[in-house]
Image 1: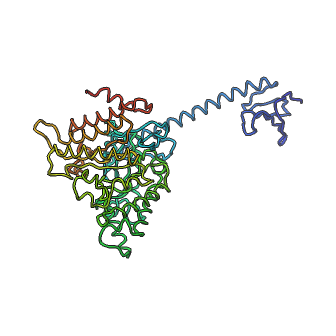
Image 2: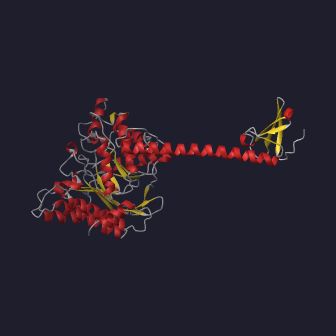
Image 3: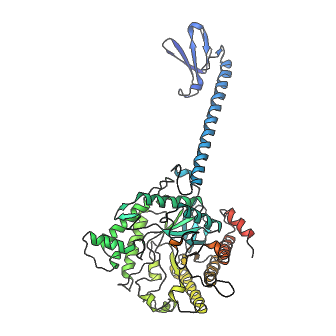
Amino acid sequence: MVYDLPNYQCFTDRGVNLFVDSRRPISNRHYLLTVWPTARRVVGPTGTTNRRESEYGFAFRGLQKREMKGRRVYSLLGILLLVAVGYLNWSSGGGGGIRVPIPWLQPRMGFVGRNGTQFVDLDDGSPIYVNGWNSYWLMVSESGYWMVEMLRRGRAMGMSVCRTWAFSDGGPNALQISPGRFDERKFQALDLVIYESRKNGIRLILSLVNNLKAFGGKAQYVRWAQAAGVNVSTSLDPFFSDSTIKGYYKDFLKAIISRKNSYSGVRYSDEPAIFAWELINEPRCDSNSSSSLLQEWIAEMASYVKSLDEKHLVTVGLEGFYGPGRTERLGINPGAWAASLGSDFIKNSAIENIDFASVHAYPDSWIPKATLEEKVKYLSSWVDSHINDSEHLLKKPVLFSEVGSQLHVKKNGSYDRDILLKIVYDKVYESASKGHAGAGALIWQLVVEGMQRYHDEFSLVAREHPSTYKLILQQSCRLQNSLKKNENASREINHICMDLPP
């Protein structure tokens, strides 16, 4: 029998003629015909008998439609599964439920870079100015609910950056149990902080070690070296000079930066929800007031971080004190004692691999006997000096990464804290509106209800203090309004700003 099928190629297998559409790959079964010579008929995959090629086309189209329908069903099931998994992850709050660590499923977010004295979104080059807050406890708190709720409240107040600890060295429930040994449960707690931050559109400044003894700090590194038989002094300053201790710290940096998030599947080095790495919280080197020892350590560690991660910004974590070599600026310091702590704002911040300057502001602690009027004068001068130096000398952005004040209630019901916080906010906004180096401020610190264990004298639940809450919202709104051309502006914060009374 002759088959008039010009578009098909014939194969014979065990007495059965197989016709394959020569226009399609042989693996595609939609176009395979089976021909039984004894029956003198041509049978398509559906079993339909046809005698002309044109008739086969009808059979194949019917088959294709059924298979395409099946594919759509499977695609729909797949989408529903992803939605269900997403809902379980979203509603779990504390990180329970199913995890799908797939990087491309994470919310879109751009990395932050630097263009001269401005932060910029590297996706579109738009400038970024920061209204943010500190919650050091996000990783170390025992309640995932507190962490998630704090991130949600920060977002609701229009804040975009949170600074928190990515360290806990030695002691109970430590992240780093001993040099190079980590508690995976704590690491997963940090994973969750980063994962939830990205879900909420919040970026994190992750501080990597403490100058203070809280949560281990540099004192713990010195103790580890002493326990290993290293000949170091009982002071804490060998942290900045001893090769063994510096090796411990570099191992920690590598472990953190190369970590793959167990919730998202994204390596920390590839995570845009990380705003910046902070080398150390409030570094001081009392035995070397010239700041040369700290200067060398900052240069070495900043370079090492950049060798592991070129995508993220790096800052020091300075308090902002001017060193003894800055005689013309010593009057800006809160007292003569500030120049003897081994740090120098300009010198330390000018290091090549330091991307932006960091400054703290605690007039209640630094000049405790001063009147409110004296604190206002001091703080105004402090902020102006650091913005000017960052603009004209460093040519880098400056972030006031801790701004703290105690709660002093005046007779009229207002707070001294609001007056001091507004000074910083106003000066940052003035600088931002001109496109200058004053890049943002982060209040110290915010908590949620029931967290007395993590309180200090500067902590507050924002919504329990309406005037401070409103001040934070107003700063978020006016910074947002100064960036009207930013197409990535949050609809949520725009809605908040519209409803905010003047």
